[in-house]
Image (cartoon, rainbow, N blue to C red; front, side, top):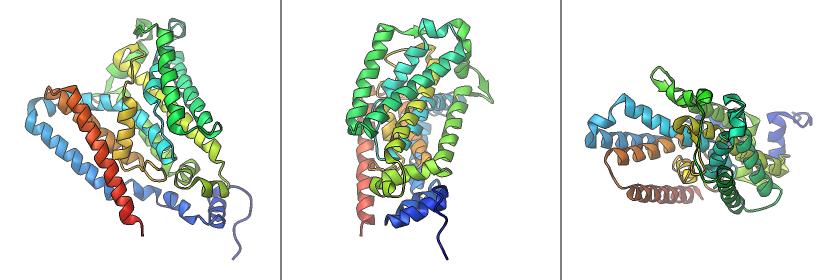
Amino acid sequence: MGGPPDDGSGHEEEGRLMAEAGRTVAEAPVTTAAPRSFELRHLGLFVALALLVGVGLVTRPAAFATADNLVSILSLAATIGVITVGATFVIIGGGIDLSVGAVMALASVWATTVATQEFGPVVMAICAILVGTGAGLVSGLLVAYGRLVPFIATLAMLVAARGLAQRMSDRRTQLVRPDNQAIVDLATTRVLGVPLLVYVFALVVVLGWVLLNRTTFGRRTYAVGGNPEAARLAGIDVRRHTMLLYALSGLCCGIAAILIMARTTTGSSTHGDLYELDAIAAVIIGGTLLTGGRGTIVGSILGLLIFTIITNLFILNGLNTSDQLIAKGLIIVVAVLLQRRNLKERTP
């Protein structure tokens, strides 16, 4: 039988081009996208979560096993979680974004300036999203078309965004004005006992999952991260797609800025400190390869919950923050070592 018509569109045409490029494996992430979310390797993450819950129930049962503490965990996870979704796309696509915390801080400062707040909460939210997306787009342009190493490009954006946020705010914390209460309501208004910002987080996760697992954009993300040259030979504009991945990460930072403004009622250049550590660590623990080409949204969110519960346990037990950072660092090292071991076992 003849091949599909050469009309330059559709999954069948991309599959044919992949085959001609000698890289039919690049189709695998898409054809197996749905089952990936339920792979057995996620079982270990559920076990880790169960163990942490057990530790909480044993060490501080009265404080840990409460509805207020659960809401606190979800609220803390929401802001970093939105950033984690964007980071998952970038890392699966073979990149890295170190600027997420600084970009979120810049977006929060820009949205809470006197000039921006004059236009109301809707414009504040739009401003935060546009600033985040714009910063991500600049990073994407530097990586994709400027041919800068992602580490260097996003490190430069981290420094520049944090500096610009400090300059705009004069290193002062900017309060959300009372007439823009709608922003704060995201954190204070509860539906079924859960703050609205948690629902925003859940919506971002669902949309991210659909985008990664049910669209051509997701197919191309796996292909670009797995083998950029094969993806190029298959007709994918690798540079444009890479740029869009960083723009998507910036968009998530903008949304996270809205959530952090709601939680703290402020915009500040200090927001998001070390958020890049938590986001990247959550993605790695969730099973996404640092080299790209493999990963899931579900795994990243499970990794995020593990980190968030660890933070909560340290706070409840009055442990030193320095010890918390040491524990997180050890977890990251162990996760990377396990990744390397699994890759070696799969290599014939």
